[in-house]
Length: 279
Image (cartoon, rainbow, N blue to C red; front, side, top):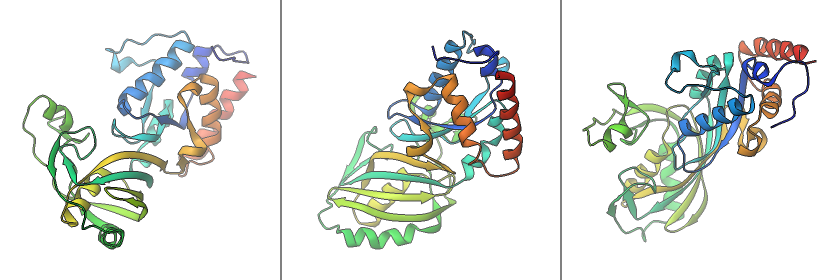
């Protein structure tokens, strides 16, 4: 159990937290799984229990600001307490990714977790070809989301419906923003891209589209989110061994300086009050 100073007990400190901070999501679990693990760790440290079936009476309000695929890793911005109301800004804000794609194979999920649906030659593709085609995908573009996604149909996620064998409808193409797109490395069949984009953008769809544009096919081998809004993976994301109440308190205090908009002053005031009560 992490050391905790001040007159407030751990449960009071935890329930009094309000703000945003960032954690590191490992490759494998879903974003929801990671959030549940974080919540469980904090509640256990505070000696508190939460019945998962009683969602309307949560003893600890927590949420995240943008889903990362289970096959992806990187930064996940978390809102706790009143900070959950500020997560909408994270959903629509700028994000940065580094992705490794592979030409020659397409999968039904557009990533390495899916089943291979097509194989095509990629020997004709040069780095110059890839760099040239990236220009078409920079700026405001129309993009069709993948079927395997967190988007919903009749209140249920498309990915969950597909796994149940239920037919789903492809979502229509929508406008998304790509601020920057460049080739970091090209070692056929693999290629590495650096991407800065806005909300609603799917890296898996981009890689799938690039394969088609270059008369081949492609899927995502690896995906890392390195930045979300003002939060960066290297500077702000708490690793799992630091998911403690003390570390979260510090992270919220440090991250308050990064949070834009009118909520900044309110969060600073709330944190200040928490510190006074802990003295």
